[in-house]
Image (cartoon, rainbow, N blue to C red; front, side):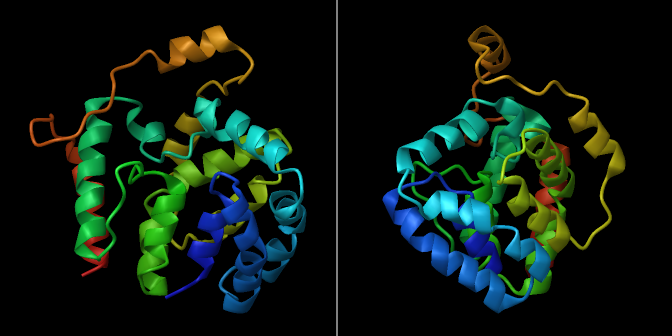
Length: 225
């Protein structure tokens, strides 16, 4: 089991005093695990300094602008596949079942497709299984990396590592489709309102199923048996 995924989860979590205190240990774990390329880990220095520095409110504001107010950079993985449709809700129900089967129980506030949560789950698995599961989201991770690079965000360096950890062949067609979608401007409030005006996600057995999502989660389950 690799601590690399838990370390990356810390770096991608909303900055708080608690997560800031964990950043030095997270970077140390990345170096010690030797799962990620050493050169990419060294390039995390600026982000680690920002997250563990004194300007916590500044780090929080930058995080919100990037990941909460910019839909094209959302850390909710299924958001990029299903939007806010019922299909996403059903996919998350299946993902919750997978988590539960491996002993991970979430709080009511945690969404299962939130990337830091997903990475925490991967840290509980053998390295080869974790890499296989990460590969299911390869095109989303790569699209997020490219968008963060355009913004010159140090968070892009976390995604450099995530993409490097993926061992499966990327779905070029799915990646191109994501990159062709408009990249949100967090300061354009009217555009953001229009973008979020979709059907709300709900959970439960009465939802319409999503065969594509169910198949993906089934493949995840097979790799973790």
